[in-house]
Image 1 (cartoon, rainbow, N blue to C red):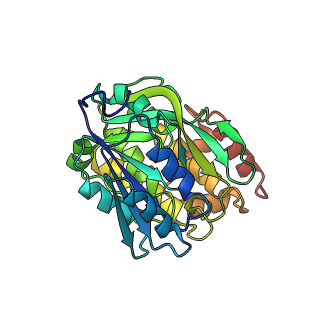
Image 2: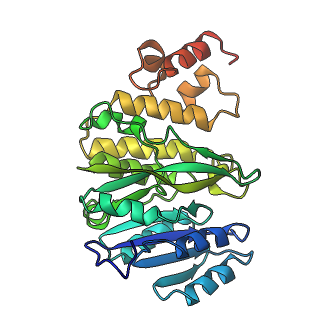
Length: 310
């Protein structure tokens, strides 16, 4: 299947952000250029790179007429993505990271799914270790929902990543969904808000993207630089659920606890610290009740509560 041989029933575009990625951006742009079913438009926003990234991107854009480059003053990835969403005219859009790599059929694998008019489409993914080159399938990124209509299981069933998903443009704009201005964890607020509101979520059934990990300059490795942002993301999700009158309780609480425990895994957080620092999460209740989704969470909470040194 290619763009020339098939008239498209739907259109789709890409919002891609870069920042000091000269060590890997060419791999991403090459994988984007060589797609078997290329997007109708590619919008690339550079967040004030100083390492030659802009020059690499500009070279690719000069040779691809549907690609558009925007060199911006450094302001954070959320601002750039929100600017990109405002510019989108296509039926669907993808929000991609400049350090990932797409399989050649990334968009082609999405197309049959998008023809079924979902609000959000999702594919499977691999982890690509930047240092070793090791590739590992992320088997836990998309878990089947116990009940497809159960919003409470959304947080367990899907990961709050944007790069493995396609979003219906009108759906996102009608609901006024944007990326919050956080140093990290900004993806999960936008993604989970989309999934919670979505009337239809469909999977491609294929693993089609290689997500780069263990790259030191990546924003996903910057938790310690803005250590409260992950908690702010949890707070924003709680506000969103309350304002939209979405009845999501235990699933959200278990997810929030699991996420925050992951975020502080390198720090010495005792049970009392969790109660004081992250008061939005009902730690006492989680420690006492049987978990619905995260089976090990109850045991971890009891261990922390019974042994203050943990």
